[in-house]
Image (cartoon, rainbow, N blue to C red; front, side, top):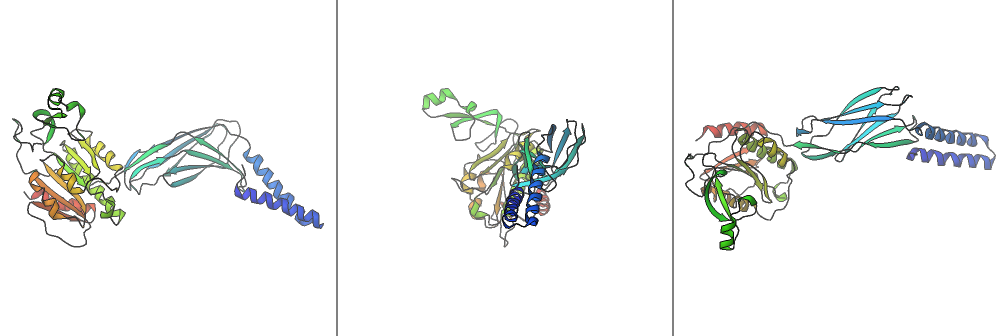
Length: 377
């Protein structure tokens, strides 16, 4: 097919030829014929359909924000004639990446690599891959698509954070109150069903008797849960980079607790983001779920989300510099330890009684403050 330049050249050549013939001047007519010949040559150049075997890989498929990810393109010429003028076009989200492919000899194979954008967190659709064959003057081109689109996960950046002591001893014989953290091993009580409970925990006999869905409350008496609440309302984040840092901080806290094989739950005002019970794959699950978190208006405020969380364990609230510390302190009695992480506050603030306050401007500052917090009992 002709490119915009090719169409312009062809139309201009016809006009020149017509003007030269009409006015009796040979020079414009010759230029018009030359332009038409160039357009015809470009069409003939791109007309053959080369036999190509194309495969594309993304390495790796999951990266932290800012880390390198590359596309690896393998192109094999299965035909008997050489192929030149190939350019690969790959889309990564709203960004298009173009890379030239060197001349392919008959039965030849080329491998080229190119960087994919990872500056922004999210699920980045990559593809479809298009191979464009154009003539040297770029008057015509042939485009073919290969393969299927893939997804590159650009996950939050994290820094190593140790698990904070909860400040309360947990008895191995069993739970002693409704504030014991949720688990899978020990039956504690029956309670009414709330959104988010697993259907397999419904106690059908009690539900039929009471007329209300009742679930078995199972607890883990020995492992306190780390609850991470992320402020995600758009009006709380004037700078998108501040929100990205907040997600990085939430991911770091959650990954640190998961690495120690402790239960973790993450939520925003829109509801649960992830909940794990402690295991070797928890960190991957948490980072994958946090990849898709974005600012959004939710049905509940951050404080409402905290109040709906089962009590016990440590509560870590990741908020903007203008967070209402007094309202957060109102729920401190429901948890063994409450920590508020404020992202780049404009002015210092005093921590309410029973609340640990950490102000930070980057992940390195968070790691240093977290180590000091872990040494304080």
